[in-house]
Amino acid sequence: MITSVLVANRGEIACRVFRTCRELGIRTIAVHSDADEGALHARVADASVRLPGEAPADTYLRGDLIVKAAVAAGADAVHPGYGFLSENADFARAVQDAGLLWIGPPPEAIEAMASKTRAKQLMGIQPLTHVAEADLPVLVKAAAGGGGRGMRVVRRIADLDAELASARAEAASAFGDGEVFVEPYVENGRHVEVQILADTHGTILPLGTRDCSLQRRHQKVVEEAPAPGLSEELQQELSTLAVRAARAADYVGAGTVEFLVADGRAHFLEMNTRLQVEHPVTEAVFGLDLVAEQIRVAEGHPLDNDPPRARGHAVEARLYAEDPSRDWTPQTGRLHRLSVPEGVRLDTGYTDGDDIGVHYDPMLAKVVAHAPTRAEAVRRLASALERAVIHGPVTNRDLLVSSLRHPEFTAARMDTGFYDRHLLELTASAADPHAPLAAALADARTSPRSRFGGWRNVPSQPQTKRYEMAGEEHEVHYRHTRTGLEAGGVRVVHAEEHLVLLEVDGVQRKFEVARYGDRLHVNTTTLTALPRFPDPTAQHAPGSLLAPMPGTVVRVADGLTAGTPVKAGDPLLWLEAMKMQHKITAPVTGTLSELCAVPGQQVEPGALLAVVKETP
Image (cartoon, rainbow, N blue to C red; front, side):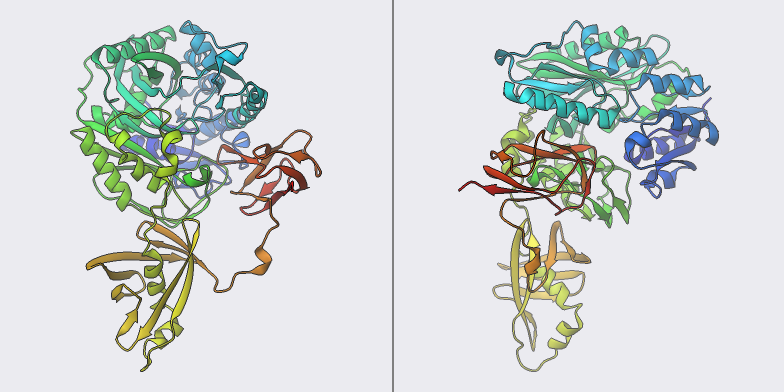
């Protein structure tokens, strides 16, 4: 009987496992890096052990330190979560060798399936060993790990070597294993997976399907269960193949078998020998707790041969601190407030006041809605996200709402090319055009000078405020009169520090305003207050390349020095932050006149990286 569990992970998944452990009466133990010392998962656990350092390679990827932490804290079992060491057979063996119970599949099963190359061979599929023009497009994939890291689509032979090198570097950083392989890239297929649960008594249960087709950078964004629109025959085929893969690996515990579905056919991708990020949608549909089932299996209990029946439909959206309109650039900073309406599930590793740093994945939370039908679940989730209060860095919230309401998604006609086709329209500014006025009026009620102006017996001069909203500058004019505030064309019904009521075209609208320094949140619109007069020293030379995010320069293009000729679009250097690599390319064709970045350098947003002087 398990009495205490150490979770060898962080953030949302650690908090989620702890929640089930508390319900089962199991003591919880966290591990935390120096960057995570005050993180939510470290605070909510019964005990927490420090892993010295900040980078994953020094902390959450150090199996030896985690095993020592488990022994020192008196744990009798280890749950790996997902990512990091969750699919590392050597770590699983080290846990068992220390006399601890491993809440996961046997190391041999991990070895059989955790490497995607070995998994495909086990299923009779061979990767490409030589890529010719006729094979394009192809997909470069990391052999270990998942989450879209170490994956690159290659459409030109000339790009293959560079993409292989980039994928190896990213895979080594994320998983401690730089092995990659190449396979045919199936265009615009659907990503469908089967959740399986297996015990030590030979029972393997397929727990329905999930559709995870909405992806960015090969990482899932929206997932749902069951996968809509599949024929009975295809569903049966997917379940049969999933059970076959599990039996081939002598699998035990919770796992997921992933497929690409195209033209009514299923193409095996891989088996993830761990819990998936999207497991809550299966839990919602089947009315079970997969973490509790993992623990029961680890304790040796048999599964019920008659699993619960699926009911209704569930949809999950991943809320990321990132800007989809700027190449999914990760965002950092203080998360002042995060809350969602009642009626949906929120899984998160953050709470109000936490800082979002540069070292780990930018996912803030998962929001899950369950309803009797797919249409109802989608509507409920979109509404909950729209009404959620998210004060802090830029997020993908607007993109999620637009995606869930896109006709292609509501009709269940989506595929993995969804964002390739629709990103531009989905990231078109959803900012409220009246938000700057509401922000200015709220500010007018908090500024002593503005309040004084309101008591004048004669009309005051127009007041001006400037804001940055959705990448554009907006200037607002209003004035104090004997009867209150006046803004041309809009009737000001009420204005105070946190609430503004405006009558627009005969309709009264409410604007809730929150301010944190120069950053303002007006309903779901984010603005930045700008100084009245721009700083002339803040200008950069034409062709300047500025860091779009805080991070580390991990690579500079071979042979790149000042004076090197470059073409528009050429990759110059790579930044890494939040477990993602961001490629910085030449904006124009010309000559590299300055190179200010070197590998290993830490940079802040807006830091000058290089300057390209355009050829006349």
